[in-house]
Image (cartoon, rainbow, N blue to C red; front, top):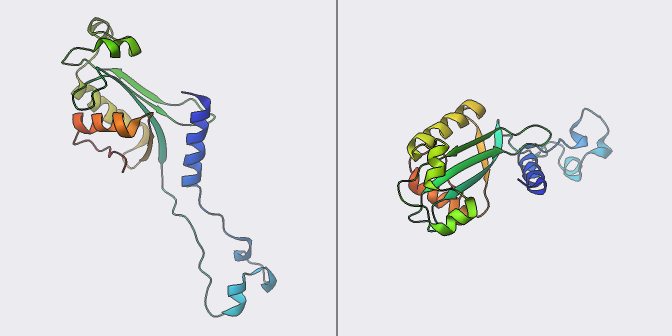
Length: 176
């Protein structure tokens, strides 16, 4: 993955997770001049503080699929790869080859250089087994209560519709 993309994802995650800092006037200082105007006008009514709710265990993940063709309604997955978007640490990742039931389109094979013979040699498994392994990896690595923030190149039009079709009862919900 490109460094620029990873930095952007980490910045996005930090913005979404880091709570608003308390304003300086909420500290225990007794000086009324540092308090906002509303405090002076209505001393008996407290000023509302805006704070962002902090989600526990928010994880940024990057998803990439290699498929048998570009037809979203009928293609099958040849490879699924998920990588954690972290800065300053080695990202944890999941990558498995999938044995499709149908043929691989020659145009798709030119892009990802995968053929049925190569997939057999790499020990590819059926999609159901690979998806079960993927869900197990996500649960073991990040916990069952993790909140996932997904990123994928062309994910809305390509990756998510394919996963929604092949794994409709998954705990992963596609973006809205």
